[in-house]
Image (cartoon, rainbow, N blue to C red):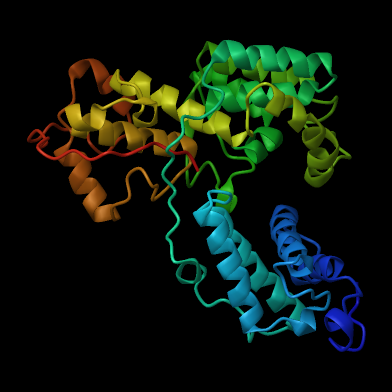
Length: 368
């Protein structure tokens, strides 16, 4: 939408309704691209607009009326929501950040903004998972896939099984190059996740290999059957990623929730927990395991291995600098011989002194 009067007029020229104006300004800012980013900011802007119109808010429907005090009042409202347990810290910080971004898009400057969402809320967000992820029960997920198939959501059923078997993000599962993955699984016994990854990851510069066990091969077979004729992935050749999300994925979400799955990202976390147990012989910390106390070195190596397979660099599980990471990996290189099969390609290929297990701390696994 073209600006009316060069940011003059109601909502800086983007229209009469503040909710509509915010979305239009974001689309202009991102040049009609970055669909998921625009959608996320827009949804959080809508929450701000609803507050503005509520009894707790100032009653505005024109973004020109918003000043720093308005934003401070909104931060206070969100802080109260957190204290009452109705909102998470991360959600509240995201809402403030999106209001900052949307106001900047509307105004064309950053004169009205919350300088530090975390300070405004008085709390720091945490990326550490404290609740066991949904989707850990394979039988439950197979039943969910069957129900989705009965409802003609074959492609969504394929996503569920593929994400659970490989730890792929939703976008990665949708855009996966299926013929290539099938060839790799059959010839190499492992697959390299390259398509749809964060940051434009490429397989040559950031390989992300996942062992192609029977579950992975079965999931790949199902996804290939669900893929439209002539397509290399799940969307049809004339179907964009955005359209696939709106018309295929979103309508199936109610079924996911009805079968105890909060969202697709839970499957990624469930995969991480399963891999941790396979690599260490202990349950993941979020499932009540205590390997980090029993064998700190093995715990750290397992976290690093899982981080690689999930495409997480500088992860929350193992966050040292590169130099420290190398030292730590070498230090924790002494692992039981029966577990060395999964350390192929890891920098810790030689044994050194055993780690000191005197200190142990409580950590919970999470998958970004």
